[in-house]
Every structure is written in structure tokens, then in C-alpha cells.
Amino acid sequence: MIEKREQTIGVGTCNVSDLAKRYVREVLDSNRLTYGPFSKKFEQMFASAHGCKFAVFLNSGTSALRIAVAALKEKYGWADGDEVLLPSITFIADLNVVTNNRLTPVFVDVHPKEYNMDPGKIEAKITTRTRCILPTHLFGLSADMESIMAIAKKHSLRVIEDGCEASFAAYRGKPVGSFGDISCFSTYQAHILTTGVGGFAATNDPELAVILRSLANHGRDGIYMQIDDDNNKTNDELREIISRRFTFVRPGYSFRATEMEAAVGVADMEDGLEDALRIRRDNALALIDVLTPFADTLQLPTWPNEDKHVFMMFPVVVKDASKVSRDALINYLEQYNIETRMMLPLINQPFVIKQYGNLGPELPVADHINKNGFYIGCHTGMTSDDFAYIGRVFRQFFDEHGKT
Ligand SMILES: Cc1ncc(COP(=O)(O)O)c(C=O)c1O
Image 1: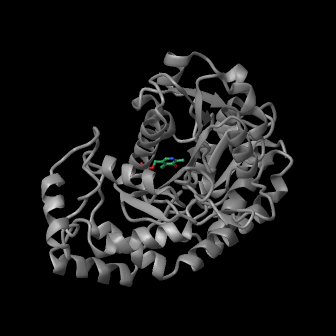
Image 2 (image 1 turned 45 degrees about the vertical axis):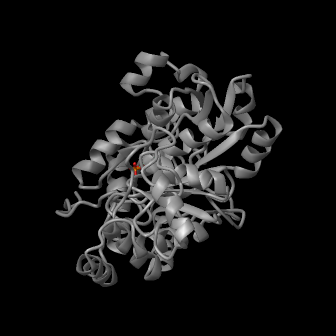
């Protein structure tokens, strides 16, 4: 019997660097806690890392998605009830932001091995009311953006990339976030880059950039979004700003983040980001190594060679439920202090079933993953001892269950 470890191998970790502490201290000493030099710098760094000209730093990835949908709805004049295509395996926020914007979600099945929206399943779901495709880059792997963008172009659809789990990933050499009209990211705990809470809406479209910033700031007139916007102006410019700066041009939200979060983000981008991405990839390879003996039973991650996978998590799918029970396996892992999560089930959530019925039969891949998928951590706090331990616990499980 393996001796159970005392310390849990979690699905995420957090390590606040000395540089981050120093920058946060600078913010506190400056008495400038809202949008300031760190927020501006973080936006510029993050935008450029994702092939975008503009990025708006927000209080969450969900806020980013919420205003991304609202901005496109406004710019392109979508009507209430128009349809947005979503992957049927993704975080619940994607569904919520669509319905919160009074649009209709349409679920598309996912790829059986990569788990992202399956481009081969998209066109069958397009109707005269379809306006947008919202693919997620799940667990750090880009969706098949070339195929998705080709379908979007053919049918004149807009695209929002949900990159919340895939900051700094790349698809065929191009950063995720650089394909769609707007891309959204999260810097919440356990994500690739962590600021506590936080997120970005990024775009290359200057008009959308203004709408996004306005939506995040109560719907303010774009002429005045933060307290430096009236600095160094001519008298004429100042008069114009004063006449418009308490003007609200659309219904908006209060989705701003603070300078403290931006300071942590800037520090993490300046110091250690490349190392962190390399460690995540090495961890994934180490996990694949210890779990390959069970690969007849367990589907381990695969990804196209030309893509940069950032491994926010390590997904595993039991191939054949008649051979091994996913629930028995995850309960076993948890008993041995290896933390697990379900693989972002969406269509089987209680309120989704209540609202849309049982979608399992028409989305068989998602249905299979919901019943058989889970993930474990792949983060920078994991060690070679952890991987060896994980391998031993799986071995013992399969020995006891006698199936592989
Ligand atoms: C795929 C995906 N979309 C959206 C979100 C929402 O991000 P946040 O938690 O920052 O609101 C998450 C967060 O976990 C996510 O994983």
C-alpha cells in the first residue's frame, strides 16, 4: 500500500514573487490604487503578447466575455435572441454571458481528443440568426482557429476567443487572441498568469477597444475613461473633455481592476513567465510519461506539433466506462490527496438541463467527456516526486481494480 501524502497535489498553485511584492508596495506607496502606470503597462504588455493592439484590464475573464459579447452586439446591431455558437465543453461563464446579453446559446460538440470546439460540427448549427462563434482554448490548447475563422468568414460571423485558460499559447506560430474580433483572458487564481482576480478583453479593432473600455466604465463617453485623461491638454481640448466627461453613452458595467492586480501581473510578465511556461510543458510530459502505462484505458493529452500548448491543466478521459469507472478513479485519487476536477461539464449542469433539456444524445462527444473526463494539476508548484507519486497511485488503483 502506498503511504498517503499529507500535502495535497492541487490543481493550481500561487507563488507571489519578490518583484510582485515590490511593485505592489510601490503602488501602495503611490496612493494611486486605480488605473495608473501599472495597469497601462500591463495592458500594453498583454496585448502585444497576444498579437493585439488593444487590451482592457478588467476584474475577471467573465467580465471580459460579458462586454465582448455586448460590444459586438452593439457594433453589429444584433437583435435579442440572435444566436452564438459555444463549445459544449467549456466553463459556465461562456453560457452565462450569452444569455445575460439576451442572446441564444447554441452548443457545438467538441473534438474527441483535443476537447475544443469541433470545426466539423459547426456548420450544421448555423442558422439565419447565427451571429458569432465563441470557441474556448481549453486547458491551454488553442482551438483549430484556421478552420473556425474560415467558417466565420464564409458565413459572415464574428468570433470571440475565450482564451481564459490559454494566455500565451499559440496556434501554428500565432498567439491565441490574435484571430477573433475580441479575445478574452482570465488572470484568476490557478490560471497561467495569476493576479488574484483579473481578466482582459483584447482586440485589434480601435472602435471595439473604445466600446469595451466604455462598457467596463459604466458606459462612459470614450473621451474620459480615467483620471489622467485630462492631463496635458490644450484649453480647447480641456473644454471639450469637461463638457463630456460625465456623459454616459451606453448602459455599462463597473468591471475595473486595481493597480495592485496590475502590479502583480506586470511583475509576472517581466520575471519568470517563460520559465513558468516551460515548467508547465515539462510537467505535462512528465505526467504523460508516468501515465502512459495506462494509455489503453486512459486518453492522455495530444496536441498538434505546431501548436504551443500551455497546459493550464492536465485532462484525462477514461476511454471505456465499462472497463473502469471515472468516479471510482477520481475518488481514489482524492483519497490519496491528488486533487481532481470534472472536465468543465456544461450541458449536464442542472440549470442547463432544466432550460435546454437533455442535450447529451445530440452532443455525444461532450456527453462522453462529461461522464468520463477529469483533470489534475500541471502547475509550476509540482515536482518530480509528485509525478512519481501520481504514477504509483494510478498503478495501485489499476492493480486493485484489475482492469489494466
Ligand atoms: C474557459 C474559461 N472561461 C472563462 C473563465 C472565467 O474567468 P474568471 O474566473 O476570471 O471570471 C474561466 C475561468 O476559470 C475559464 O476557465
